Length: 262
Image (spheres, rainbow, N blue to C red):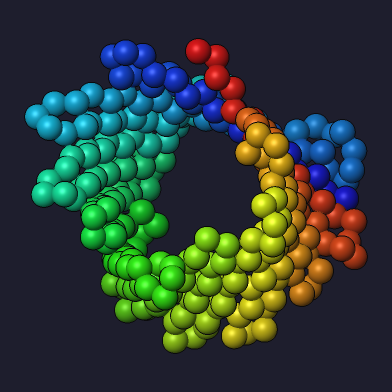
């Protein structure tokens, strides 16, 4: 059995001056072969940011860095980023640029615009090394909301579209490209139970059951046709994910915990 535990501690607080206190992420990997053996690695990541408003715009900036013991201090910084947000003619506009400091010298940009009155949004993104553009338009029809979301990747000329239909208790989503299609239907059975089956044109099938708990918590269990099992448990500041298979003893566990000190 292989057990992987990933603990993520997030500290989110802000002062009156708009400075965000550091967010600490701790990644622990180990416990091989079902024993309590030594950890494979410990690489705590610290990220921090600051925000301010001026000239009708909101400005944000931040950085991430490793704090593991090392003599190579220059290897600790991971990335820096800056973001500006504003509103113009009913549109909410934002632009974010991130520069990697890990030796790759990569720079990614993201521009987003949305208009709530028109139920329309536009996004240009290069965060994963490729330029992507997508547009989403929603409108009321047939007793619910219909959304059309075409997406296009410039480098590869790949295009797909996401079509959605939502009512109070039912949502239907169709993802379609030249190579594959996927249909997802979510149905609210009772106030605390939702069933979401999915099927693809390649024969992949999965069913998710979400059980709502007190206080906004929930447990979601997803099973696919190959016997894969995933359980997501949200319990206040805790989030646990269990990945396994019905006919397999291997288990991967991820645990996240948010800590607010201030």
